[in-house]
Amino acid sequence: MSSQMTALELLKLGDQGREAPVLNKYWPYILGAVFGVGTGITLNLCTRRPIWSGIQKHILGVAGWTATLNYAQNKRNAYYAEKDAVLRHYIELHPEDFPEPERKKIGDLLEDWIPIR
Image (tube, rainbow, N blue to C red; front, side, top):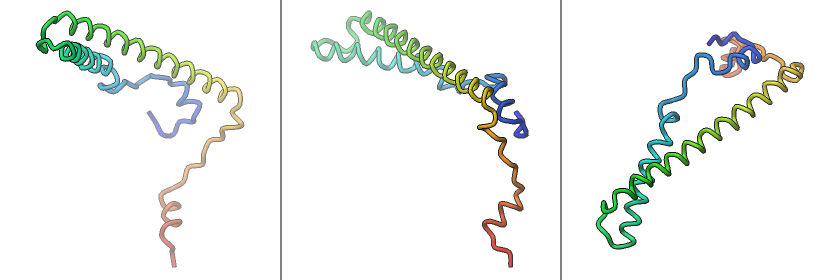
């Protein structure tokens, strides 16, 4: 994406050319596996059973946690998509409140930092 685009042009691009980071895509599954196995182990330790006995507890824990976290991720994505749409709509209706910032050259920035004698 070009840095020469206006704010409205950038907003209208949406998710075009963007991909979610790997960890953001897979965190419900990773945490679901960790929490599910941890839940099964904790239940077995609290009832004084061998750690891996009743493997169905571990499988159900992984499935339950993964489904719950995946649902939470989808709700979060929907919430932020709606929020972005509302902000985009407001900016489109009131462009005078969002002027395009002026571009400064590197030389102009250095003058502020380095006093020229």
